Picture 1: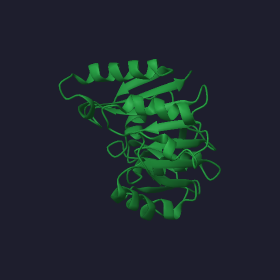
Picture 2: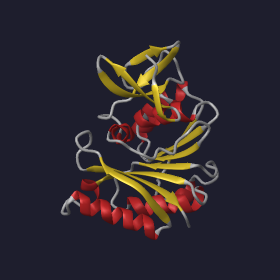
Picture 3: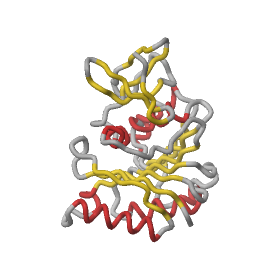
Picture 4: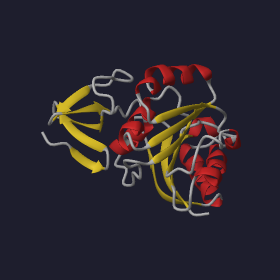
Length: 227
């Protein structure tokens, strides 16, 4: 079995007649959330569940633009306990780096214990993504911002961070949970409004797709910064 690599560092494996998304394990022998480990050609891969990760869900739904690549620097807003972050860590590899921001102490402790302790390419930041100036001293310019913060003003938060950390033509992933933004509006109206807010903040929308059935009332937006 030769794994297909649709994007750098992202693999599609066929196991038991099912196609699964996977990343090459940066920490062989170790799992993060009980994911399956698969050895192919002397290399170990971690299965990436679309029910546990919005980025994996987007890949399963046919994402056409996946700008993450080895050696990239990534600012991850809303890193939580690190399920998706661990796969981003796999993709960027030992020569890339991820700065993971979250305001909740408990998930941050889990991130440190389960993920950061075993991976040198992740720096945890206990902080509020609404105030990027508070961590500007420890985060450099990055190639990609990944945002999964489930806040009503999420697009504005992404723009604010982009203005500090994202160069022109840098990329952003924005995972939109419509019910966290406006429960009174249909999800597609919410997605359209978030995309317009990103445009007004200097982003070009490159792609968007809904994540059902993996994540109900969620969408993934891929955008490029053109301030």
